[in-house]
Amino acid sequence: MTSYLLGFIISSAIVVLAYYKKTLTTQGAIMAFIIGTIIYGLMGFYAFFILLSFFLIAFLIRFFHESQTPEERNAAQVFAIGGVATFFAFLYGYYEYELFKVLFIGAIAGAAADAFSSEIGQFSKNPPLSILTLKEMKRGLSGGVSPLGLLFGFIAALFYSGLAVFALENIRAVFLILIFAFFNTVLDSILGLAQVKYKYPGDKVLFDQKKKGMIIAEGIGWLTNNRVNLISNLMTIALLALSYIYLL
Image 1 (spheres, rainbow, N blue to C red):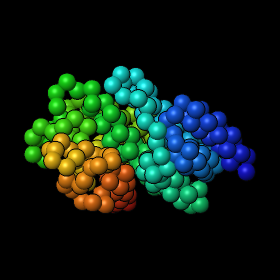
Image 2 (cartoon, one colour):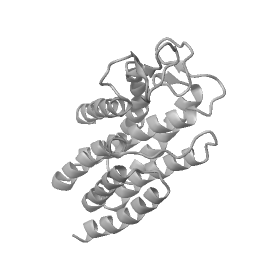
Image 3 (tube, rainbow, N blue to C red):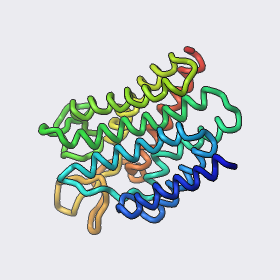
Image 4 (tube, rainbow, N blue to C red):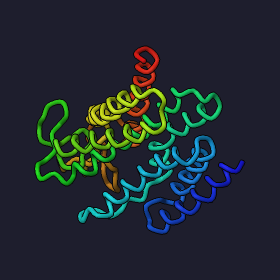
């Protein structure tokens, strides 16, 4: 119970600060608090630090990006980032198999690689290209990639696989985390091409997020950005699990 109490206290302090800085909505703050408390309680400070580092780095990137204001993440966005990792934290807390620790780190590493690729890719001076056709796309539109974004997606994967060195007994699993975390960036971009996109009637400019007066322009109606993130993360983790079981 001591670990859960510490998780409760630390998560509360961090979530209150994030809410005060307007990086979390009320529902997002509640979800972040629940996830943080569970992960600290089940896996301890090191696992909590791995999760926390994602939100801190993402906040700093957006905070220092002059063209953007820090995004208020809602419950769905927080769950899309930390929900899969929390599931494996439950499994590890019950069974204590290293596989579940690998998948926990892999889930966060994959989400981080994709997020940092997207965020830092927006600093690129050149327009993004479709990951499949290599045609120019509107900046910020799902499915587009840039060399800068892919580079930092790989750096993020490398960073989290580096953190895994201190947590895993099987060092070869670290390389699997690196490979599949970066693969998540690529897969997310591919799925992003099928993501629902919107436009104003009579206009040709596409947007990922729907605003008042917009209509669906292309893509799969139910495939929103949060669902793309969640699906790509789940698919990547499934491949990571199979690789760990059959290759290590």
